[in-house]
Length: 146
View 1 (spheres, rainbow, N blue to C red):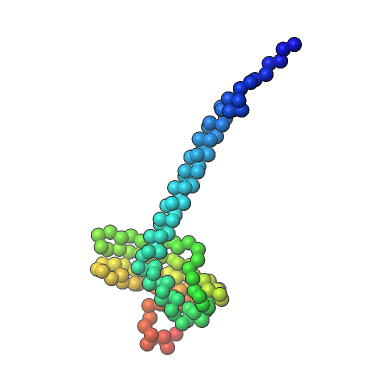
View 2: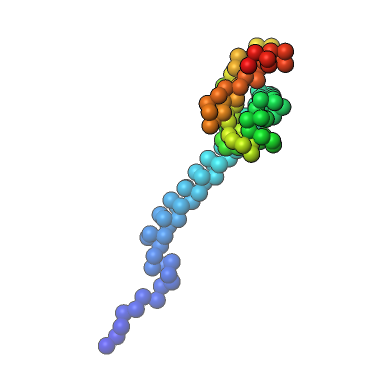
C-alpha cells in the first residue's frame, strides 16, 4: 500500500490561516505603535507648556503644599485636560497629579492667553486624602488669611 504524505513545507500547508493572522497582528502592532506615539506627543506638549511648568514649580515651592506632601514633590501619572493655542491666543485647563512622601494631590490649572502672558483664573492643589484645596495664586502677604 502506498501512503499519501504531504511533502509541502509547514508554511505551504498552513498559509491559509498564517497570512490573515499575520496581517491582523501587523495591523494591531501598528495601531499600538501609533497610539503610543500619539500619547507621548500629547504628554510632552502638556509638559512643555508654560502653565504646566509654572504650576508645578509653584506647588514645589509652596510651604503649605510641602507641609502636606513632604519633599520632594514630583509629578506622577497622566496629565489630563487640554490646551488650545492658536494665533497667539490660548486656553488651558489642566489636571496635574503630584506626589510626595506624605501623600498625593492634584494641581488644577485654568488659564487664558490673550497677549504674551498667561492669565490664571485657577491654580490650586487639591489634597487626595483630605480634599483640602491650597491656592497657588495668592501672594505671600495674604498667606495669613488661611
